[in-house]
Length: 136
Image (cartoon, rainbow, N blue to C red; front, top):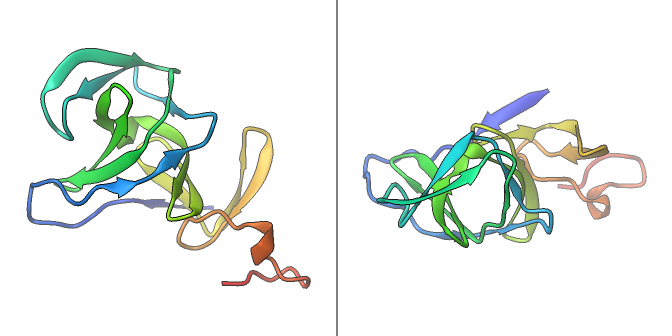
């Protein structure tokens, strides 16, 4: 089983471009005991927190100094402390704690088995050939 860590290399500590994403209807689960909600990615603390096990939806992500940030209805949070399905560019991938993801393997998630290509995208039935090979 393989995992990949998502990082963006940059020498510029400024925020990189915003990427529209969507979470599944089940949302993403907070894995930290208390997740700080910020006004902007890597920005000022709003004083609010999400608690471990809370479910949040996300609609954007970005990187600041190679750190992942996700936008929720309450503000920005570190992407390292969320887990769940994300929709990006019409394809699904599964974020695990630490902002890692399964790649080139099958994984059981919430009682269902999913296959992931080498880049971490979920393989959909339309991409499986009758002989079982994967259409890329």
